[in-house]
Figure 1 (tube, rainbow, N blue to C red):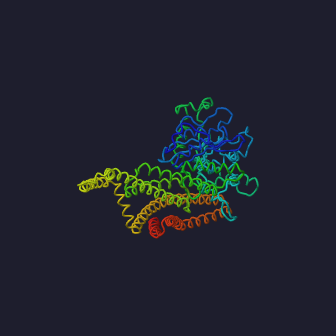
Figure 2 (spheres, one colour):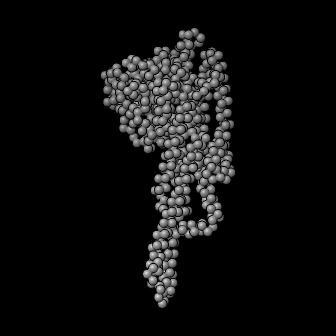
Figure 3 (spheres, rainbow, N blue to C red):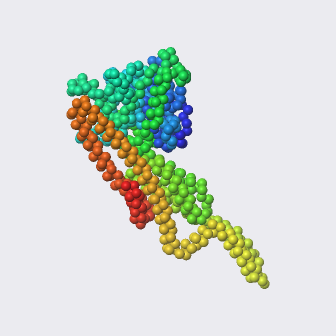
Length: 589
């Protein structure tokens, strides 16, 4: 796991403070702040005492870690976190979130359970719902938290009356996995064997009719069908005898039921291979640092009595991430320059070092900045790098001047001393003076052959040429800025292309789910609902086409913003910058 270290054991991410309000644990936040790579976040929720923690330990590749209980008490409190290197996706971290059991009678706080469930949904790439026995009406009624999601989570800050909310939720909600534990039935429908996925789909079928009883029956099923584009089911037999179940952490694989072990391995392989990196609205991939900040944004909304809003969270996250990104990148750039540059040195060498440090700094900014569409923070960064480089050029000039003066005093000091003591005020003194001057001049030229003296001659020429030399320096500044612009445009377009590809895949996934849902409704003779689903499909397809056509204008806006930043620093630069950006866009589309 890059930059985050390996966690030997889970830590609590979200817990109750002394006043009973949720808050983010600082130790967990610090761990996430150290993870600068994309994260795949898997949360498990479910009723207490159903064995959720064991599955998470399996995903972590460990026998123990998340606390397992063998009594009637709920063992996990709050939301616990375990970050491990992803076993299949190189350069990614797998973040496992184990939530406290829902429905613990000792808590007596139904709203607390609702917020735990909502936070698991908001933070996850994949949400695992763990239950015991079978998927029947009682099991679905216990999953009533899913019916409250629209009341407790908003995707957009403002939603129009005619807008389809389920599409927005489906875009941003995680994939859903139902893990049915202690399953003893045979997977059959009539005489036909069925898969666990078909078992789940059958359990989510709607009842025809509009009676209040049918509406209550259909509500959790409809929510699961409409909110989660990807649904998967695993059924696990009882892993061991009742006596051995009390010591699950100590059981070896040989002591576990072979069918349970096979299902557990299938479950882990599915999660490893199919759980996507966590993203937010717009397709931006979330790093560990961003996940920690998101946790704080959502928890703060809950603490203040507000409904967490994904759109507002992205705005808040962008501000937090980008302010830190600019500060971090500037520190990185300065450290790189100070580490490599040994002043005084030739201006060309300093420019080369600046080019290397600048390129690395831009790479860091691309990976740490977030949703800087208006280029506000990029402009700020470019200005700061430009000013820092100019300051270092000035320092180099001053260091060269000082060293030149030291060399002059060292070389010609003997001559000046002879002048002051009158050594040349005698017959033949002029010849001695001329010979000494010739020798010292030769010595001086030998020393001025170094890069420092080259810089001195450069400065002398600059004074002589005046405005002409200033124009040459301006051209060099243009070249430096062009290099910055080209590098930044290359990287930002690559990043936006990845984000747009992720948005496209998410939209296609939602479209596929809605097409499948429409067919299911038609087969069950839900004509009205099927017609409504068809309208949602048409709206989604229109939205996808609109997004496709707007992508180029968005990228053009970004390139224009980068050019504006360059113009702010060096007027007259932008025409070439925009030309380069447009050529990049033509390659992309």
